[in-house]
Image 1 (cartoon, rainbow, N blue to C red):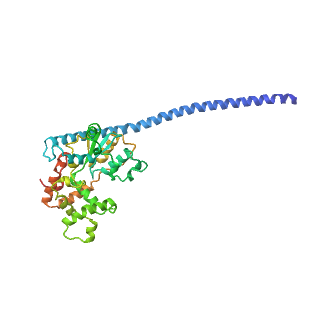
Image 2 (image 1 turned 180 degrees about the vertical axis):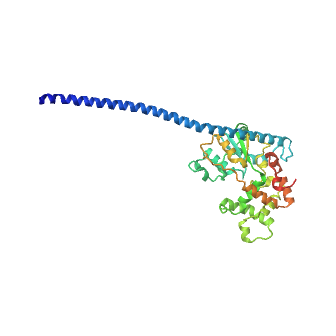
Amino acid sequence: AHDGINQYIPIRLLKKLLKVAVIFLLALLLGHVCSSVLKGFAENNTEEVSSKIARPLKYAMRKRDEKVESLNRKRLTMMKNQCSGGDISEPKFLAAHQKKGLYNRVFVDHKHKFAYCSVPKAACTKWKQILLKSGEVAMYEDEDIEDIFPHLDYHFKRLSDLDTIKALRVLDKYYTFTFARDPLVRIVSAWRDKFQHHPKENRSDYVNFHHQYGRNIMRRFREKFTPHELERGFPISFQEYINYITSFSNVEEMNEHWIPVTTICRPCHINYNFVGKFENQKEESEYLIDKLNLQNYVPEHFFKEASSSSRDEAKVLLRDISVDKKQILTKLYKDDAAIFGYDLNEFLGID
């Protein structure tokens, strides 16, 4: 009897093991099926969520592009009309030295095929930082774009580096653009940046500026100054600054920070594809970044909305200058106002 029992124990164990194995395999199969179903559901759901996010983003970008392109068409039409029939003082043809000065202001990115005319106090620092990144200047390759000091001009490729035929080909084939700014707000911003106290005032480029221009302004327009004041050439009052700017009979002799934009970038002589406005720099610069495929070089929110504080300050400061100075400023910046669509009377209050 004991031998019979021992004979059937392995068979019973075998049946149990077989049953466990079958259950285990069925569980594995069911798990695989469920995993595949869930994975497919998750992928479809992710795609659906991504699609739901992407659709309004694409729509917003399309609406932005339509708005910016519409504004640009109107600006270019107005510029063309003013250049051909407006009361402006731009020469019909540029002399050799004028063309050389213009071409020296136009920076070129041959890789992305665009040319940018740089206007100080109209978002030029940001665009020059972009150029040093997009142009893949070796020394800035690993540097954060916002840490780049972009005012060492020898790093840039310029239109003036090319012979006449190549320069004309760039102007014809590349995407050309610049940015304008309300001329009177721009000169107030330049005064605030160059001749008033701020954290960067002791940086070498500012000190050199104070020595070159501040000392000259003091000698000419300040009745009394100490040796220490003259040595620093800084700070300069707004009235002294206005006296200096309005003393020029030839705008081409002015510094780039307060020379009219029409004299820097000659919109009547270059057929720009795009003319942006500093007042709308964020939206319009982001449009250009997408259009020129510069997204890999520029972080999100690189450009900020233009503050209204400079505009408010300009109204206060310019309100108190004399009528004769207002008339001279009107004469100096009337071309900028006419070509780019600004109203000088908003600040000067004269007809």
